[in-house]
Structure formats: C-alpha cells, structure tokens
Length: 275
Image (cartoon, helix red, strand yellow):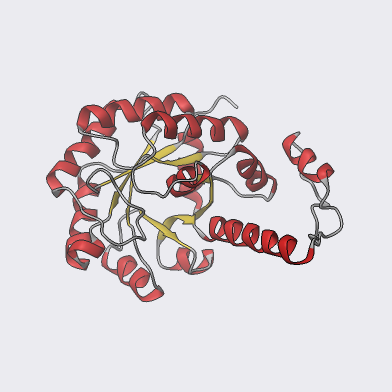
C-alpha cells in the first residue's frame, strides 16, 4: 500500500473516533488487524515490559524505534507509536521523528515529562516548563519529512500540577501546532469527563480502558488508545501460569491450537480462533 500511513490515519480520524488497541510486538499487531481494528498503538509501557523492565525511561530511542519498525512491518494498519519525551532537546526530538518516520509509523507522541520519564499512570512524575515542550512540538513538526505524519503532544501535568495547568498546557501544545493532544493519567470516569468538557473543540486523545468507544466518541475524543487489551493480556497470562502450576493442565477452547495463530501470521483471519 503506497499511501503514507499518516494519510490513512488522518482519513480515519476524519470519519470518527479511531480505537487503537495497545500492542508491543508483531503478532499482537497482526491479531488486532485480524480482529478488524483500523489502527494499533505501540505502547512504550508494553515495549519496556517486553524487555522485563518497568516504564521508567530505561528503554531508549534506538530500542523504541526498532520496535516501532517491527510492529509497522507486521501490519497494514496505521501505527501510532509512543516516543516518550523525544529523548532530549529539540535536536533529539528531530532525530526521533526521523527514525520513527523511517520505521513506518503513522503517528508518534511526545510528552512533557522530565527524563527519565515514568508511565503516565504512575506517581512521582515531573514535567518540564511548558515553553520547553512547545519548542519540542515545533521541532517535531519541522522535522517530519512527510507532512502527513501525525504529531501528538501529551501532557503529564495533571498529577504534579493539577487540572488547570494540564488543560492550559494542552491548549498551548495545540496552538504550537500539534495535530492531536492528550492529557494522560485520567484515572476515573469523572476526570475523563472533565478533560473532555474543559478541552472541547481540541482534537483529543484518550488513553484508558474505562469507557466504551461510543462513550468516548460522545465526549468528543478523536483517538482512543485502549489500554485494557494489554492489561488483560498480562492478567490472562498470569492466570494461565497459575492454572498450569496448580493443576498441571491448561484448558483450551476448540480451535486454539498452533494452526489458528499460524493462519494469522500468514495473513488469514483465523475464524476458528478458539471461539
């Protein structure tokens, strides 16, 4: 498919809410495509977890860009990718955009945390001055080789600085030219509703699992990065290991053999994928 992935993502966004499940490797991206999703999100948390590490700035630009390339190569879907803080100042941000575009992503997001960063749902985050982040946003926009690449600006100011500052930063980053903005760390439905109302009119991203897509669309969100898929993945794997340890067996539904995942990897839809 010759069309730039960013152009495909922009077309999807123009049609309504885009739901992008969290993935962190190629097989998950293929499964999302086979399940009928229109886009996927390469999670920084998941990428770090795949190395057996917490999401605390221990994975660098080269590792993240390489994983983005693997995910993008595995699917025809537009890939939205976590780019943490851009890994430094404006020059580093420009390099990040270059590598991520080369990897084949449709979009990337940078955030206003200090480095080393922390997962947006963890405590102890610290953010850089808003004007420094504005400069990073402008650098990202200037660095993209294809204007269709979607630049997303994320603020993590909610926990350390409060609602007013988080909303003000989202507005500033949008004014600086970000294609989409989002306030991360929205931990309950009331706070999600506040962000949607306070920032109504801005092209908003939601990172959560608490709302249905219909609810997110009704609140005005444009892109829904669905964390629940990844959380369920880890939860289910743990439960399966506990089952094997306790009983010596793993119960599997019909069709859950090697054949169905092989079919997905070969490009099929795996209709008999265990249910």
